[in-house]
Length: 213
Image 1: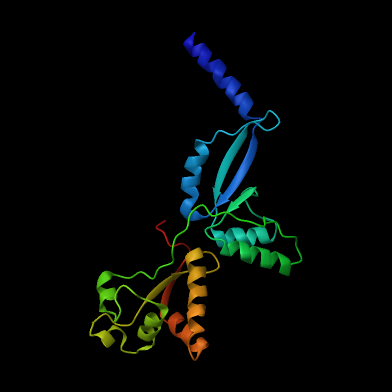
Image 2: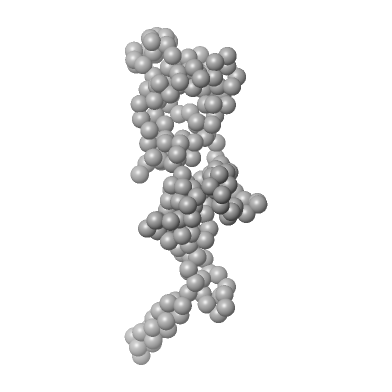
C-alpha cells in the first residue's frame, strides 16, 4: 500500500508540476549557486491556481547586458523574467545602450541590491609590503611601478617588471569597475591618457571572471 501510495503521489505531483509557471532568473556568475539554493527552498503561492517554478540561469553580467540590449535574440538560454547582475552599473549601461538603439527601457526605476562588496587591488603580501604605503595601494602606486623600467628593482626587489592581471570590462564587473576607477584616478593627473596607458601597459592577462572557475 505504501509503494502504491507513493506512486500515486508522484503521479499527482508530476501532473501538477507540468502546469507550473516558469520564473526564469538570470544571475551573474558569483551568486548563481546561492540563488539556485534559495530557489530550491522557495515555496510561492499559486498564480491562477498554478504553481511557480523558479529556474536560475547563470550568465556573466556583461554577456547578459548585451543579450538584453537586443531583446535576448539568438540566445540558447530562455529569456529571463528577472535579471540579477553583479552591480547596478550594468543597469545603467543597458538603459543607455537600449536608448542608443531606439529601444524602450525595460528596467524598473528602482533596483534593489542583494549584497555589496568593495573593489580591491590584490597582490601577494610581500609585494604589498614593499610599496611605500603598505595597506593603502592605489592606482597611483600601480602607475608609478608600471612606468618605471626598473620595475620592482625601484624598491630593491628582484621581481622584474610589474605584471597586472585584470578581468575583461565588457564581461566582468570587477573589470568594468577597475576601468572606471582607473579613469577616475586619471582625472586627478596632469595627463590622464598617459596615466591610463601606463597602467594598461602592465596588463599581461585579461580573464572572463575574477573567481576560480
